[in-house]
Amino acid sequence: MRIILLFLFSALYALAQQDTIKTAEGLRYVRLQAGTGELPAAGDKLKVRFVGKLQDGTVFESIEPGQSYTFKLGEGSVIAGWEIGFARMRKGEKGMLIIPPTLAYGLMGVKDPEDNGKYLVPPDATLWFEVELIDIKR
Image (tube, rainbow, N blue to C red):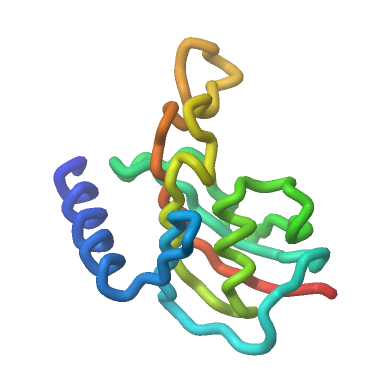
């Protein structure tokens, strides 16, 4: 199973090298489905769906099917990679955010609250988020 996941991520990574927007900050964004309308602006409320994975395919966080997560763009309530990535998406757009550690949790990682010796996100991890921008409220 792990070999299949590694192959899948390797293939996705190869695709990302060709069809990726790379920002000056180091974020890579692969558009999987185009959206419509205007780009969001700072202060807009964004309603999103996501699955967060480590490079080995391990899911560390996700939204349940049919659910969503809402945040205000530009307030710093989410990792910098999300702020940068979602600012480039339109309503209905789906994509993959490939977020370097400097735009995620950096050298600190995220410890498991139930087992302080384990990490949900290890230090210096690059994160892969499958994302969808469901709605933008101005």
